[in-house]
Amino acid sequence: MIYSISRKLLILTSFMFISACGADDVSDQQWRALDLNNTVLLTLPHGSVVIELAPQFSPKHVERFSALVKKSFYDDTKFYRVIDGFVAQAGPKDGTDKDKSVPLLAIEGQFSTDKNWSFTQVQTKDLFASKTGFKAGFALASDNNTSAWLTHCPGTLAMARSNEADSASSHFYFVIGQAPRYLDKIMTIFGRVVYGMEHIQAIKRTSVVEGEYAVDSREHTPIISMKLMIDVPKNERIIIEVENTESTGFTERLVKRRARENEFFYKKPPPVLDVCQVPIRSRFIRNNKI
Amino acid sequence: MIYSISRKLLILTSFMFISACGADDVSDQQWRALDLNNTVLLTLPHGSVVIELAPQFSPKHVERFSALVKKSFYDDTKFYRVIDGFVAQAGPKDGTDKDKSVPLLAIEGQFSTDKNWSFTQVQTKDLFASKTGFKAGFALASDNNTSAWLTHCPGTLAMARSNEADSASSHFYFVIGQAPRYLDKIMTIFGRVVYGMEHIQAIKRTSVVEGEYAVDSREHTPIISMKLMIDVPKNERIIIEVENTESTGFTERLVKRRARENEFFYKKPPPVLDVCQVPIRSRFIRNNKI
Image (cartoon, rainbow over all chains, first blue to last red; front, side):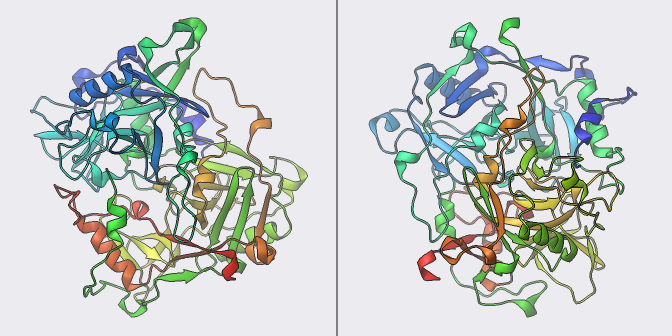
């Protein structure tokens, strides 16, 4: 049955591969530990979610989000705008003192790169950019050699905003459907779900189709708590390691994935990869190993 | 906050638009009633899901699936292979008499087209095909003027198979993550979720990451029942209408969606559309209107 492949993909035959770019950064380390200062534990009524923040790409947004998390700002707030196939959005009640207490932020939708900048390239001639790839576990796109940006994929965490570019404050969203890549560059992505995405997918939808009754706000999924992992008592931490997207093993996996050599593919698909359809694996480190 | 857009998009200014292809089929009917003989009501422990079948594209698979549904074949079977971001797969227990009782099917992964064949075109130079579009509510792709195929998008229903092309029998899957377009043409897609996708997303995952304990099969989500809507007592039916993808209104919406004219887009994204990121709307018809 489909994708018994996944197990077979793990059995990689070793072979030489010269990366098109970023060869200097390639490492033998398949797994990377998360920095607990930049990892968030989100507790929902139905499960726990671990998020990796991206201070290297969106420093001001991570600083803001971390500061709010540290003061329990989001605890007891609700996912008030949840549209199946699109986003799950949370934040304080619009227009309340709590909401208005948070100053606005300048957008960090893309960043400048120079000729030395590189990533683990996935695809050229992507529908929305001239190339896509990964860096530090995050999916990115780049148009030329002058700028790059984090891309919206399922599990992406980004800050919501009003119509103005620099109008984000505290409201955030997770992508829960097909990548809304048209939001790339004009929103600030600052993290991604590395564990528990199924619980994000199970957040109660708040939107209805024409003809249905509205969802009562009392049914909206609450955030029980959100904490930086470093602030979680050691015996309650969820320790996750993620695939090192700068490793030779990862690059080899991209090559394999593109080639679809498994006999399940009795006819080969086009040798292309959608950057949002390449899983970046996580692994769970048992608490008793801490 | 993001996508207050959706409401504004509904207020379409009327304007003339000449469709690039399929202009002859364009209709003024914005909504289309489903054929209850080709609509399935899937009852899960946590909610109801409505599926539209596609006999016009995959007649043998729809015939098979409908026949199995009619004899309650899937009732009490489980979603035994559910991988977050990929698929939720169900069917009888592998190797049982029930499983082996169902004969194999020849694949219906693509079909021939002639120069008169048309669809509501969405995009050219898609990553996986030379063009994409919609027909009868389904997302399709086409490489030239000789063949077309249904594409894997979130909510797609397709038949699972073994390594051989013609090895599908009764096991099926729903796509629950970023479109696995590399499965296009080599799997038979034969339906799509038109209502209750959030309940498909909430099906219990059966795969775990490295380091986690396996999920006990007793936790797998069961199918309470699956029925053709025509066989559901009238007062228990869920009547859904779907957007008519051959309508002028839909074509206008595609144009609007591509242009992203709303002021939320302070900087315009590339004028492209991912066919799997265009929602085909459904509406709920109250039972008391039947």
